[in-house]
Length: 356
Image (cartoon, rainbow, N blue to C red; front, side, top):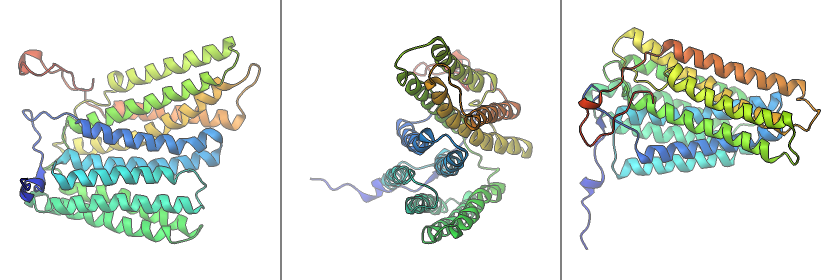
């Protein structure tokens, strides 16, 4: 039996070179990784479905932000650095497992021990990302960038661990501090990343794929509302059809109207600012989709002659408004890419258009 060469299993992290002649598409492993995180989002949304209240929305938003931020951190790293060795595969496996642990601790109130476990699991997610950035420090041109990311996320992870050992309400202050450090780190570090921007094609594609899966979760909520109806009425049927039509409209608006998944090149400070706005605008979009999907299920499930509670109607209307405003922002800062000419592609590649 031949023993595999360790040097072949452990490879140094390399920098992805982005340019006109370096196309890159999402891999099957990345799609599977995204699916794990959307499954975690679905678990976080179950308590909201049971109690469509302001407290439920606040809890959902907090946990969703952590899940999205963990996914975004991994996505930003993999779109900038190339590493497909055994260590990277193990890191990805661990992050997927931690996402499952986060979902398993997302059922109870924020002052519960399970929520403390959610924060501790998130800290583990950040520590894995810190190890990935430390591996990438050997690349001279990104040493300052990777050091800032590793230091910032490492400090945040320690605060998250401390919060897991602290009771509420003091825990909430540590959460706020840790989240502030987490969100401030990219703004501080990215000043040193202008010469190594995220891949112009791959990064928006990952966001587009995540959006598609979340739209699928919206459709799943519509289906749950449909299944709750024992006897169909015209209002229930029309509401269900309207919910499906709304999802189709959102898909068209994001990919075709707003160009949300179009190529995004970052070569100038202005492009960098627009990129940041585009990136962060996805958070309210995803939150709005998640909350509105649950509201649509409640709306379809109403028995004939009944209406949503005023608070439920307020939450549903606000979530739709937030999602539409986020889409408008994404459209405002997006620069639509020109379609790739079929004749310019190698014969083995299928023609595609950026953003579709």
